[in-house]
Length: 500
Image (tube, rainbow, N blue to C red; front, side, top):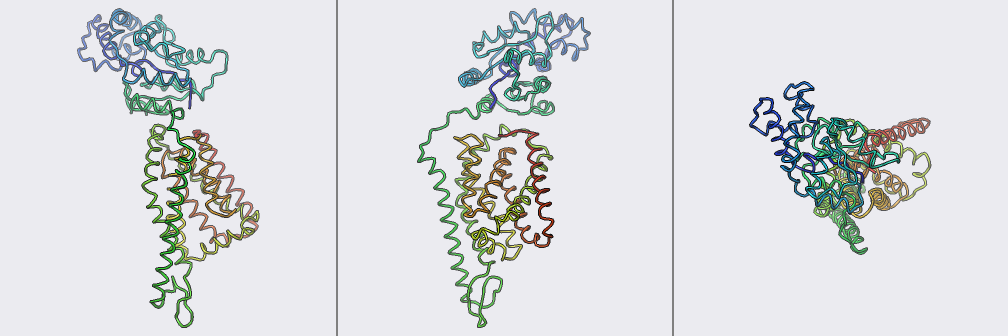
């Protein structure tokens, strides 16, 4: 959450089209230029007037100054009030102010006019600082306006750029913000539009005052108060349902396969038989198929609950991820997943955690005794999908409603670790659980933790088979290099954007 907010005026707080365009029309008429279509004059909204007269009507500096003076001749008494607040602006400003945020206006319009407009609409009281250009033409560029607004907001203190947003509708607002090293929020309900804001590389883009309010207030909203019992129920009910359904289906599958095996012959892929052809037990393949069925059915049972929590979080995240992430960010995440998966698995083995855990050895014996492609399908696709619906789709999304994101991440990762029931998978699950939440928040898409989980499981499962061919002396170097690559991937991601 950022608590220093600089607002552009025209096209962001107010819709000034009629006033600005009719005054431009008036100024042009004094030069013998007739422009009956006000829509064609919309580009004058936002940038400095002198620049616009020179750009759009090929005026020289002296002519542009004269045109600006004619514009102001009508604007100061008439055009100034041919204006309207966008719906929801007063309510948004009131809400921001009540949360203790510091609001400022940073406009290219002369300050004397900005002050009168704010007073006219009775919203001046919400702004700690109001900065505009001067009537003599000084401080007209957006970066100069932003610089002065920051100076007045922070005074003698260092400017905390990571706590500031510049909010505006035109590319000039974005460019002015970036020139000062602060993030820009573009609004498409003004006069710049989506393409202009994307081209200017706005950090965030919102489509309405309602979306802007939600974006700026995220993390400060008063959530519905839940009792401790209700919060525990949010977690306990889906978890118990998941375990109950999974184990029930597993039991029924084993019972079914046992019945089939007792009444048929052959089937060495699934059944263990004595020399007389009688069924003695089920193979690891049968156990894996039964486990897969349990995970698949339990995930279907959880789907309705998970959809609700995932869709609610998706709506919150959408405002933070309108632009989409560049391809290099996916590459950095891939580097982090591959490096950390290989490095952590090797580290746990080299440090003796794998060999000293009897409970893990029992799990591994069942997992790795099955047919390799079947194991990949179960542990690389079915299991990750089911577990992500529960641990990130439900648990994490419930936690993040009433906890800080970092605390919600640790809580969901800790439960994921405990769920595995042994120290080896517990340590690994805790660290990878944090990585899955990081990917979720970074990309704003539930498919990302699912993809991370699947990739990590496929790599870990494959490592158990391929690792036997690697000389022991190479384990430590491979481990160190892998962890370094994983750390580099996370560092590169964090360098591009901070999410916690």
